[in-house]
Length: 78
Figure 1 (tube, rainbow, N blue to C red):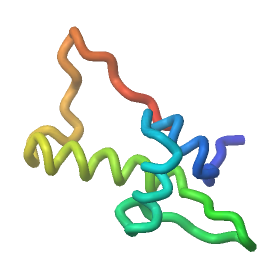
Figure 2: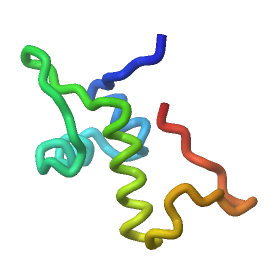
Figure 3: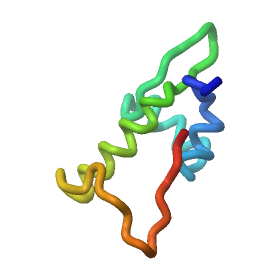
Figure 4: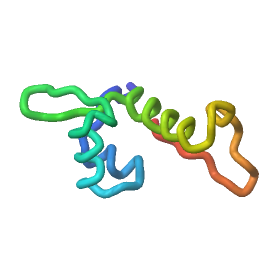
């Protein structure tokens, strides 16, 4: 079964950032999350949305969904 929620530590690892940065992204609302009891989890689609939003902001509207150049390796977040 495919996971739909990720703990903050895994989110940091998947994004390639520190745990502190991942918590700051969640705390600021820049990265959408949900709370289950006392635990904070990030939906898988929120990771995809965040990366796509960054790509669009940094590379323009035409970059979303574009294929990577041969020298670049695509990032898998699933």
